[in-house]
Length: 106
Image (tube, rainbow, N blue to C red; front, side, top):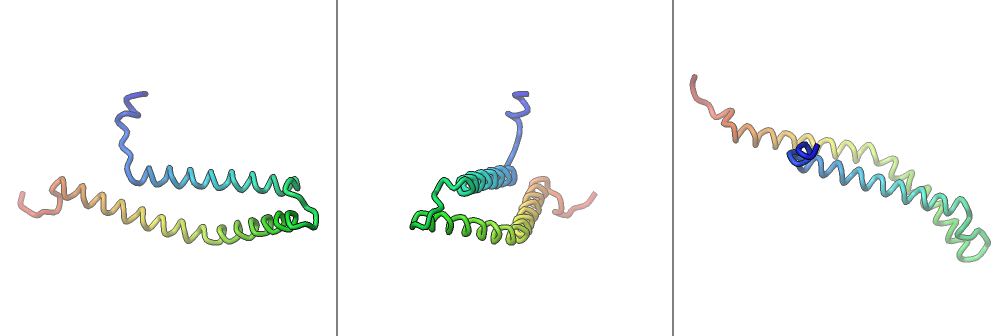
């Protein structure tokens, strides 16, 4: 098992996927924590400045999640195109190293 991990060759794509996945998981955890705190009324719900702030925080969080959700398809499309171009560049570089496409005879 150790030899598989030692010989594993990642790269930009695997680092990009791992970083994006970590970011998504972190954001989801933060949203769940904030939602739980606001749902339990731990920040106060009275008609004071603190209560108004907690209510505004809750409504802004809900609106922000909706805004992000509408942009996810666009973000995924851009990430897919960037990944596709990256794969094409890597394949082109490997072809250059192997001497493919330089012409010549049999």
